[in-house]
Length: 337
Image (tube, rainbow, N blue to C red; front, side, top):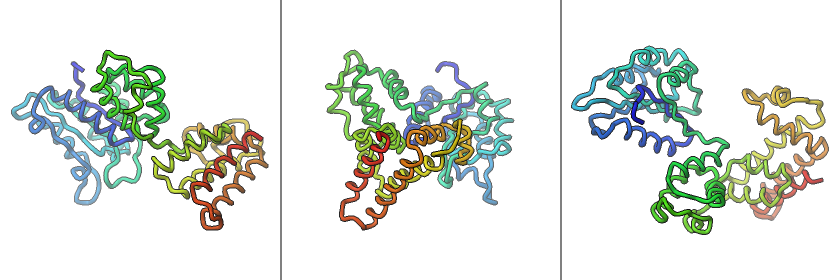
């Protein structure tokens, strides 16, 4: 990164990944300058006015401040997610039309301490930074495999195909642990040696949690063994309570039952019926399952879930984990009948 942009938009959904990316970017932008003199951080408390509203005045003032005893200043704006409405970022858009040459502005699109959910980046701001600055996206989403391969390449560690696959499976949702594993492997094996699966196994640590959709996907494929593995990782690594998992499964099969037996031709039509907004991807999966199961098996799934709910509430003397394992196995079997 030799030619630095005036503004950067750093976005993501994992605080550790955001923190790592911010630390790396700030170090590059400072170019050896003192952090004490060259870096200023603005947070949500700086945005709040006496009336309790949010204002970009403090950020704009910091961005327009000339350096003192340094050649440049890096201004980091944390918790920018509070400015999700177009009209709120207008002062920032005006500044970015003619930014101070000695300021490097880093906008961190993340939830503030008082936010319940993170809104979208205003289109006008995103497009402006894409044209004249740089967007750094740390979001992983469902593309964990591709993301892990990219991190392996950036780390300089050489892993064979089996080792990369095992690393991807092991981290699950805990993507932030990837950097630590790769740093350990680099310190042990260096950059010149090919690291095999057998070499890597002692350094993997315990398996991370998995997203709930991996459990429902395994059930939908009729693969009870994989589904039980995903269930155990949700329980052990993810710390999910029995009733939480039951709630996930009930929501999943309730959607399927609503579609089963109906003459629905497309994912978009299914999304409209289910009330899904935005992408029709999830509705498409529900429709596919509804076609697999049909009305009778969909109703059977809900019946199994109701029985498990009563069992978890004390009707059965079995342990909670056993009740869930039996439920998952029976739900998986429905797809094979």
